[in-house]
Image (tube, rainbow, N blue to C red; front, side):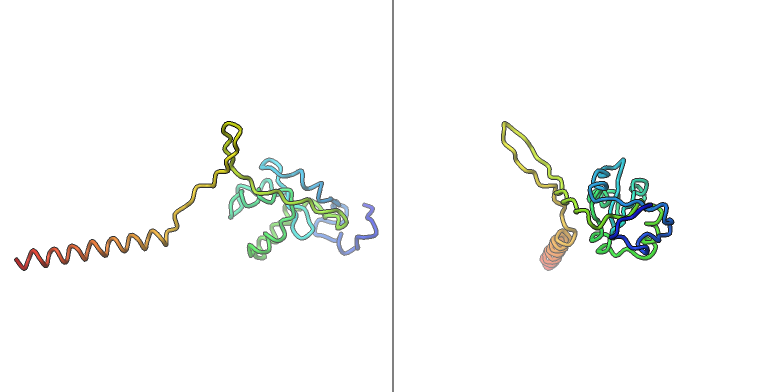
Length: 158
């Protein structure tokens, strides 16, 4: 494979062998952005993780949110260990051309409700935080127990 002057010989020495390296642009990877064809970029390398979607411990949605994009920051911030890094070799597609321009990240999808030419954004359903409900339940139980104790005390004194 003929490489441009911006690639060093060390960059192309991967476990896959020099003849297996493909040079891809950010645009090349950006079209692989759906559940049937999901690629990500991690540390200037492209990976086809389509077959890994169902097995990803964090769920497929995590990967689909960064499909076709540079996911280096998300990968590193998730605290992946050496096992995850070794697994990447299995999904390796090629190197990212450092001279290509990154594609702008897609905005997260929003749910819209269209009614009579009016667009009303709808927020995702909120989940009650267990900590808040737990506190309220404890208060209710406390006051019920206190009321029963006072009532029992009044009843038994008569």
